[in-house]
Length: 246
Ligand SMILES: [Zn+2]
Image (cartoon, rainbow, N blue to C red; front, side, top):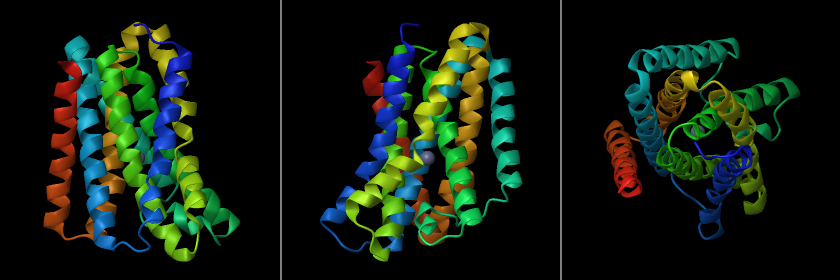
């Protein structure tokens, strides 16, 4: 393990900033159909599933049982937190504008939970080998662009400027650097915990991919479009992984 806390923070900061890129297409187009939102959420889910697969494979190679245990605990933790927050899956950062204080706090809490799972994924992957870290960081950064697009698709029609929409998008991912660092420090300090941590991050990320991204995607696009985009996202990630590893 050669990574330092600084590198982990920077990597997770880059993934957060990537979210802002999702607003940029709106410099050129003023409107985009909900169907594209569904497709981009589907692709984002596929990317996350690809990254989770890599985390599980890495963890299983070290200690399969601990990886499975981590997977269960990670997914459970996100599921229980979501229930406690009484997550309505139609909550979006776009509604922050004009939302009451309690609703705004709920939206921020849901965003934080989602982004936290991804930050832990980045942090833990840096405890594994360097290629895994590159791969997972890349997957989360690209997926964040899709999320920024989804956020902007809600904000821009409400008259929010592109740069402001980019800023909100980046803000929604700020938990990533904040949670990546302690997750990394934890698996770095207690190396035997690494396979558990890799499973934990995968479990949390799979929950987010299915519970949020996919359930949103199915609302906006026909099932077959969503299914195709999930597979495309997954294939893109596997291809990226082959390129990184060779
Ligand atoms: Zn996400």
